[in-house]
Amino acid sequence: MRPVSIRQWSPWGLLLCLLCCSCLGAPSPSTAPEKRPGSQGLRFRLAGFPRKPFEGRVEIQRAGEWGTICDDDFTLQAAHVLCRELGFTEATGWTHSAKYGPGTGRIWLDNLSCSGTEQSVTECASRGWGNSDCTHDEDAGVICKDQRLPGFSDSNVIETRVRLKGGAHPGEGRVEVLKASTWGTVCDRKWDLQAASVVCRELGFGSAREALSGARMGQGMGAIHLSEVRCSGQELSLWKCPHKNITAEDCSHSRDAGVRCNLPYTGVETKIRLSGGRSQHEGRVEVQIGEAGSLRWGLICGDDWGTLEAMVVCRQLGLGYANHGLQETWYWDSGNTTEVVMSGVRCTGSELSLDQCAHHGTHIACKRTGTRFTAGVICSETASDLLLHSALVQETAYIEDRPLHMLYCAAEENCLARSARSAPWPYGHRRLLRFSSQIHNLGRADFRPKAGRHSWVWHECHGHYHSMDIFTHYDILTPNGTKVAEGHKASFCLEDTECQEDVAKRYECANFGEQGITVGCWDLYRHDIDCQWIDITDVRPGNYILQVVINPNFEVAESDFTNNAMKCNCKYDGHRIWVHNCHIGDAFSEEANRRFERYPGQTSNQIV
Image 1: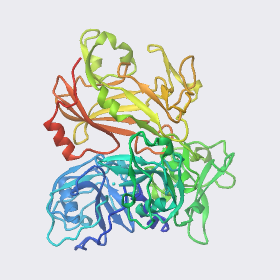
Image 2: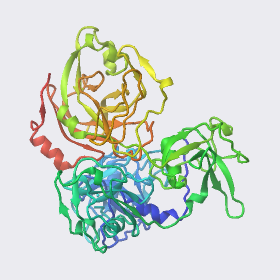
Image 3: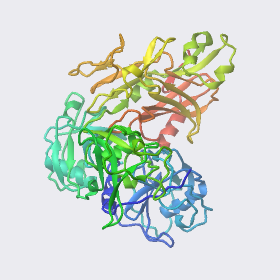
Image 4: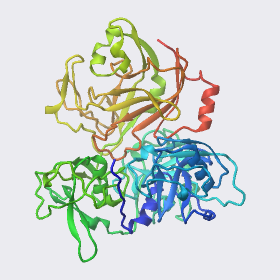
């Protein structure tokens, strides 16, 4: 893969540092870490949730920006060096595939290679600072020995206790707080500007511009932790304000509180523009390059351009979310701008401006040339937000040995493991891990398939249309992240199975009806329908992770992709399976793993 270079606009350094902390909480106030030989002014911290103080995702601050390390070529020797940078004596292990959750912002190091004796990570070999072809799903973590280096003064441990969700712009969203390792919302009773300002400052922003009530940033799901919060405005944390702990009967998610924070002006929206669209919310993307006195506008190559890149453009322009990322824009007039000045753009979706994404730098490489194959976007102030009901997965998981003569349709749709092709059809059976999936739309726009009805695919065997070829991914992973079994679910039918009390159903698949999930409704795929499983026939007994990812290819835009993945602990003894600790997005704590090992029968699901 071609090496990529990263450029940056300096006004964003401070703001990125602030915003990278916003989804996990601000660093706890303390003294800066002790400078050590070779560290060259870098700062280090452990982040992620849940975790202990000596483990987590490794984050490095360089040039005022926090970023992560890719797990490619990562070893225990690199973990030793990083643990010493963090003030611990040595490493006892390391993790890959974002076990502690994906980070945000830059990926500072890739292909990191250390001998283990280096005084600083700067002495290790790598692709260079900011040169990476990874995504944050590959963030590396370390597990350090809980023993401090003598005289080391620690500092930058993030404590993951307030966050914002559902906002279309940086510094706004639904307020969620962490209690007993569970995220929950805040009821808007007595919610005011003083309380909102405490939240904004806790997340590293300025004071609050607006205190929002009535779930204006979308409704949350699960617990409501706080109500009647009364702050003076000077508290360091929302938890320091007098408040009332509530029960489910005291408030509903239709009253979830939110905030809009004041942010410093950076002017980066002047470095990018849309042209040729029917409105200000759509068009071909143009970026400004060059130095003062020789500035010019240019186009972006459409190769591999998608939803994540479009999200960054819409955010940078202050236009909310991306509805679509377009690789062809021949139907939009490019005017006098015809030069392609950027290619190979790859974003994680969390960047604040396009220049923070990886790209080819000054070397332009486009597979398809001409202005018709340049990047475009369609932006929107609202977006859907899908969330899997994780508790239902845990409650409904079980094993079935299903005869092969009942699996012809499933085989036609590639819902079985590869070894099924050589099975003695129609004799024998496949062992299937079954579970139900209940998928809620918590956003502020309906979830609609990208393809129109004219392009849906009819499957004769099952007798239905697929509006999305892959709607969910199902995986069985080893504890270190290696995939040992997989499944997928096409959108057999996206419809409103049930809705909240005050919401009417809009989508129904009968009679070739429109497909989608309305805001405030959910779609239920029961455990007993075809392909709602993972074929584990070839899986050996052991401890595993069950992972479910909704909308895995980012085919449909959402306001938040960080909550699209669910993980569970699994213990399989060859005859039975126990599914435990299912939750959205975050990794597992070691304590949870130990409890699971001691009490394997507490959530027993018997074999059928």
